[in-house]
Image (cartoon, rainbow, N blue to C red; front, side, top):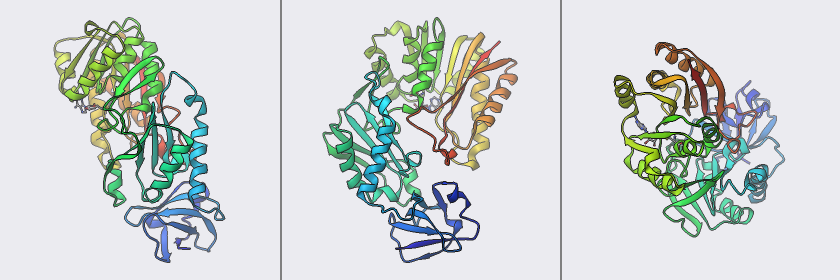
Length: 395
Ligand code: SAH
């Protein structure tokens, strides 16, 4: 079998079961593995460390399939991994009031690069890595059998594939094409989403618990929902008894979907407004107009893709938190998020604290928020913790 020989000392992360082998860790390659092929990983002394999938064009040169060198990486191996990922979520999948859920979360479920999300009767997959790309047909076949559904759709259109030398890939993999709008149920709230055109695989499943949190904090409050997308937090806010919700997003089509979602849940147009605007500008305008809110959600897109962009991102997170803080009534709640992996919770807390201070306010953190449990964090793989949020009350 093809073998990657590591440099001396570079085995330590693998001994802790971290799943990535970086190009700099590799002393030499024996054999001539193709992209996606299984390779043996050995330390400088020739000791086997496990089996991985090879990715010649990526800085992450190999991703571990198994830390047991005696395993065989084949269709049955993959089936067992998929089965385990689904079994881990059985409590969530048996909840009739939760018809959408991530079934497979890549490295955290020990299937590097594969994401599978369930939206009602449809599954949506992302193959983000050569290792799973070469097993696509087998994976689809197993998913059909392990999770009976109407159709399986691919949304491997994300930028991450570029690093792998893989072109974007989107379309039906098996079964019926999903309808233009698929409806999901989230604890009695209904959301319509587009599997074909929506962000990620269609919806922000990672915010599930945080929508629940917002729902229970909103009674009687005037809510400003910034970066509203299709109304995820806004609908949770009204379901929780908010007096009014103002949704802001720069994308008019997203807000159209949001409007349909508010109607789907029986909310009247008097209960909410949708505003197409740039949040950075609008918050300043509102400050000038002395507008006031009782709860503000800030859930922006990823401002930092990489560590290099992270200073600029930190400034952007601070800017919106500062402007929003100035709009909150005494006792108001700031609910702000970052989904940038490069910004960890201690830094995000510091950014938020500085922003609140610079707005001339004082506050306390009531809740630390993270991604939902169907997006678990592999114990040896802290990189998979990417979503951070804070609920702060301001005096
Ligand atoms: N909160 C949403 C997800 C937000 S995704 C949910 O829970 O479903 C980020 C959104 O921010 C996108 O809809 C995008 O259109 C919007 N956006 C990006 N930059 C923006 C800006 N400067 N002003 C307003 N909206 C912006």
